[in-house]
Image 1 (tube, rainbow, N blue to C red):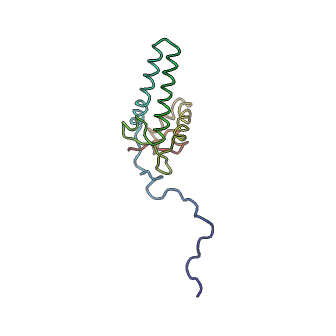
Image 2 (image 1 turned 180 degrees about the horizontal axis):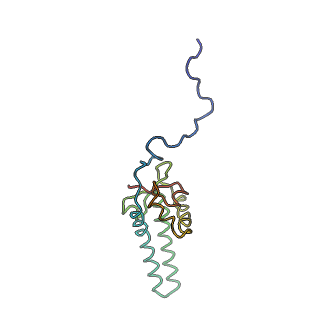
Image 3 (image 1 turned 90 degrees about the horizontal axis):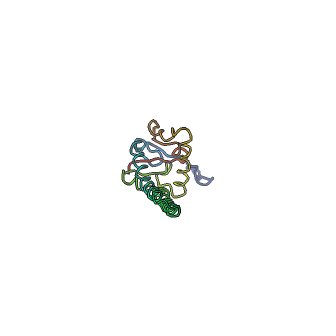
Length: 155
C-alpha cells in the first residue's frame, strides 16, 4: 500500500517565523513601562554614582578622586551591565520594571546591556530626542532600544 499522508519534511528544521499572535517576542503588546518611570529608574541608578564622584571631588586630592571614580565605575559595571543584563538594575527593581529582549522576552545578558548603553549615545547625538521617543513610540522604546531590540516592561 502506498503512503497516502503528507511526506515527511526533508530540509531540516522549518525556518523561524517570528512571534505569533497578540504577543511580540513573549511580551504582551500593550504592556510597556511609561517614560516617567523609566526616567525615575535612570535617576535612581545614577544618584549613587553622582554621590561618589561628588565626594571624591570635594576631597581636593587627585588620588582620592580617582579612587572614587574607580569605585563609581565598578558600581556602573555591576548595576547597569551585570544587573541590567539580568533584567533589573537597582532603579528598575525599585520602580518595578524589567529590561527584556523584544524577540525572546528574556533578559538580554551583560554584553548586550553594555552595548545598549553604548547605543544610548545615539539617543543623545540628536539633541537628546532619542531619550524622548518613549513618549510617542508604540512600544515606548528609545532609539537604543530599537537598535538593540529591547523593551522595558512592568515586572
